[in-house]
Image (cartoon, rainbow, N blue to C red; front, side, top):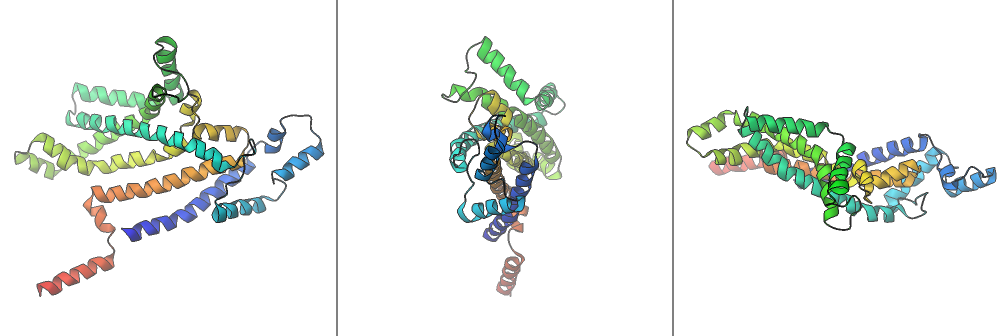
Length: 327
């Protein structure tokens, strides 16, 4: 297990470097000029433009700028300074990442707490009215645009009923609508994935054998079927990890939440390359780590996957010891 984790951590290094190089190139070559955005006016001289370009370090060749940025990140964990605020990028990220993680984890927990039991219930009650109702609602939720759902929630619960605040994060009431709206698509995916996975498992021979022995249905479902049906569900949750740190740009913008998503949107509009790179780096690191955690969870759920973490040398040594002991 430790050797597997070590190998995965080493693989993260070229992955993160590749992500940084690609995103840096795309940011630098996309339309727009950060120097003009920084000057903020059309009435500037060429000398002012050249001075600002030199101050931001944009007068150097692309390869030199890329190498300097990567060297600063690798050796000093220096993400540079924001073009818009002249503040270190690490300070801006430190203020925003906690909000996005908190909001994202709450939405994932809500989706998991509701989605998995509803998917199990739908699979157990296959081809019944509750099953058809749940399937239809999950498809509708997966099809609804996030911005429309958020705006409708504000219109109903804030403008008309006046029971929930429309923006900000200053009390527990402010979390209700953003968390609910952010979890809807994940909830719909979990319901459908849990249902399909459970249906595939409960049709297996060992499930029929357990039922024929007179085992209670709840024991068959939760002890034998659910554990084998969880791997696709874990995959769905793992694929949503990027949204936890990166933040949902739509949700954070509509509800005026100071998270990573709104920071990224502001940086893109202002051509603030250091902030774009900082958000991308933090998101990539978090996604790589969470994918590693998902693989470890796989091993805890499925014994066959857990056996793959044991090296062939160790298995061979163990078999040889057992044979010697038997002799």
